[in-house]
Length: 166
Image 1 (tube, rainbow, N blue to C red):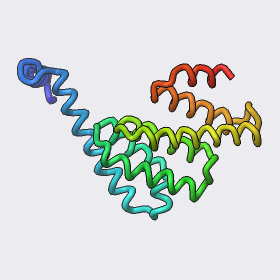
Image 2: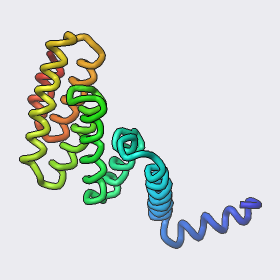
Image 3: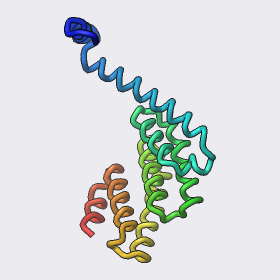
Image 4: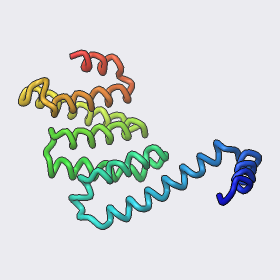
């Protein structure tokens, strides 16, 4: 805006037209779309394995979930889990975070059996971390934190609370 009068006219149009909340929602929608487009282009420039294990792929999947585009997020998360398993192994905290995100999405879209299977896998990974690294190792603590979040978001508050108290 060049001056205060122009700024006032624009704000009045917003307030009297679509409203501030709707205007903000539209701006957020446009920004998310732009971020998604740029992120997809960036992913297209890196190798398949690097793409699957990148933070960008994970963050784009989370953005897609936030936007309600579950069908677009699902393949990104499946590829992320597969890539992280291949690169880091099943028990690595990065792999477990990707598994948690996939399990949450699967639960959200009604694929509870597969989500539960991933949750059980995460519990085995957590047990392995505890056994091999000890309860206070950063990887164990990260795994516990991820599992508490997964259980909470799947509506299993009692189990999450029990694990958190350990």
